[in-house]
Length: 125
Image 1 (cartoon, rainbow, N blue to C red):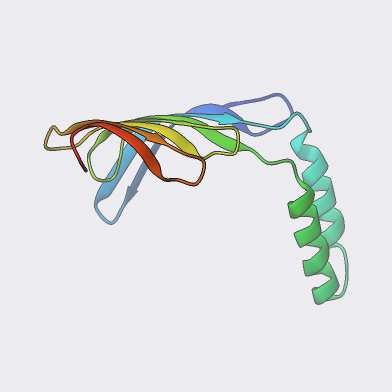
Image 2 (cartoon, rainbow, N blue to C red):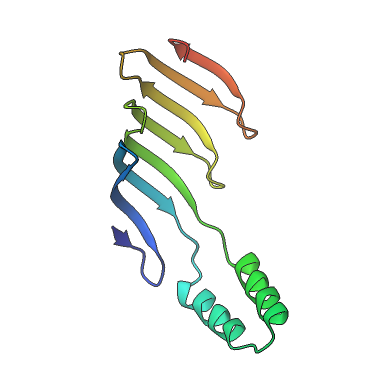
C-alpha cells in the first residue's frame, strides 16, 4: 500500500482469502485533501465524552462530517475466479466493468449511476 501524504492509502495490492475463496488485485482509491489526522482528532475528542449516548452521537457526527473517499479502480481476480477490471466514478460507483469468467466468457458492462447495466458487450453473465 502507498499512502497519500497525511491521508490513507491511495494505491495498493490486496489479497483476501476467506472460506476457501480468494481475490487478489491492484486497487486505486481517491482520497480527500483534508488530513486524516483531522478525523482522528474529532474521534478522540468524542471518545473522551463520559456519557455513552452523547459519546456515540459525537462519534457519529464526526464520521458523517468526514470527507468521503472512493475506490476508483480494481484490476485483478475476483472470488468467483473472474479476471476483472472495474472503473468507478468519484462516488465509488462502478461505471465500467470488464470481465472474463473462469469458463472464458468475456463481457464489458456500461453501468449508470444507479447501478443498472445500460449496455453490455459480449457474453451474458
